[in-house]
Length: 394
Image (cartoon, rainbow, N blue to C red; front, side, top):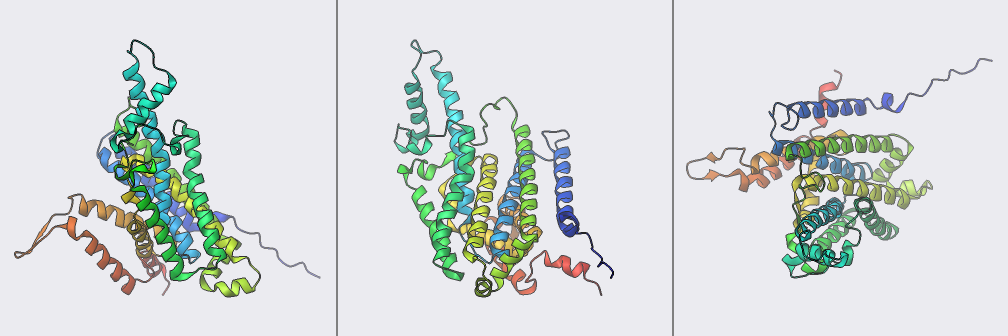
């Protein structure tokens, strides 16, 4: 009796060569930007461009999270940008508080009588909330003085919101377009709430000056921008690796089966709601972390960033790049984000037709819509589907 041959199982990276390719390309891209940046040497890339590239990497990270929840699990969430914004608000609170605290302490240092802790706190509150007619620090800012606690909030608040919302929705077996509408309604409600001045987050004014990092004010923005770019690249690499590992094994097979035929998976004995809730919550946490890296580079966050249209754009990015492919989500987010910066930032020249001049700042969204329709009609698998055509054997 002969023993059957036992073929050793390949490692994760060996079974998923696209992950190694992606991480390698990301590493080369990071190295190239670093060498060409103003904060490192020859200044062939300006500080503003480095910030744009760093923010683009953060958008790629949330796009990967969106691809997992939609492309792999079949949940078309139109609210994930809300989690992105919550992460930005969480880190922005510490940035504003710590920077204002330094200004207040310095201004009160020459006072005849040293200020008490309560007086310093009141002065900080007046500086931050005077713009909305308040001089009290809201309870929402109870942990704003502590960076570690606010970093916990970056992950905890989006995660709890997604957990509660997902538990209520999935246990009621809300699916399809109805679930999409619910997620959009959640985002709209949060956005409208944040527009009010009494929410404790400065209403329409939002949080500003986030690019001024407390304790690093002596460093030029070119250096800080490069550091945030590195952090964004690292976060994207780790996030991509995490999600690639998640969708490659048995768990990935189950959530793809849920996407294709939820009723059959439930009939086979799987607790579908638990799988969907885990994916929804985990991607919300990663979205919050991406937002916490994005807004210090953007310098400002306000309720308009959480408007439902932002989450719709996110779905468009994933669709253009190629739903169901993690690298497709990265391609879609990067292409659309950089194109948007070029067209709306004055990089694209106006087109004079004689009877009308096309100003791309006004026509960019029309171009994006046409591009989305074209990709849907002619490349249903998105831009990443072109790779299949290139590598397909005759």
